[in-house]
Length: 259
Image 1 (cartoon, rainbow, N blue to C red):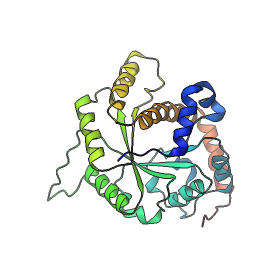
Image 2: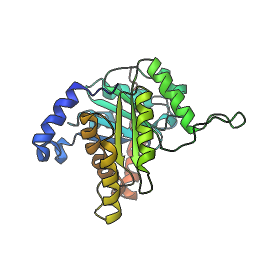
Image 3: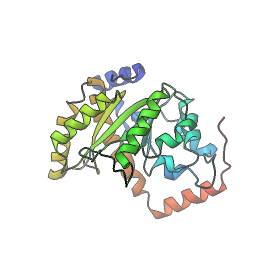
Image 4: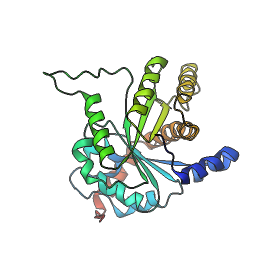
């Protein structure tokens, strides 16, 4: 059964009546974090003091960890724990293929949503010779997480070629899997793009959101897409020199172990 956090319900209600104040830059509801920009590959405790302070000092109630596959990084569980301990909600986005293998590293707290990307129309039949595919591995990870007491959210991204019938099937499947939340967003920057093709994708995403069955998750989805796309674009616009300086900074920072 879909359930939406009470604290976020209050925030969404405020945003509905005062959208400009709630969605201003200083009070953006969602802070996007690219795991690859923060986590060091060569350490199981890769989070720097400074980066953690920056994330946790943000006023956004939600921290969305995504970008390149977060579960590829050894220290992701320490990063998640450090953020949830400060009262933020964390949506850890993953393709789910490594979820079952790494689920034991996380703690099932009410502020953490393991957010699994699922694509509509993916073949779900497991071949005896090829073994389980990405969809099956993701489903196994979701099942293991559910049995361990974690909150599960499905993230469905809408593309120009996405068929509404296929998305309806995916949402129906998500309900049958007893997930706690469903987020539907327009993919590839369409949430913020002014061109005609992007508008068609946004319209399609709006139609799909109506199938979620929860006004709160529908409203939250409307916030997620623009927030993630705008912050990803801002990160790309920093340029190569900014990335280089960031890498140098990381190399000189002392890693912090989160208990």
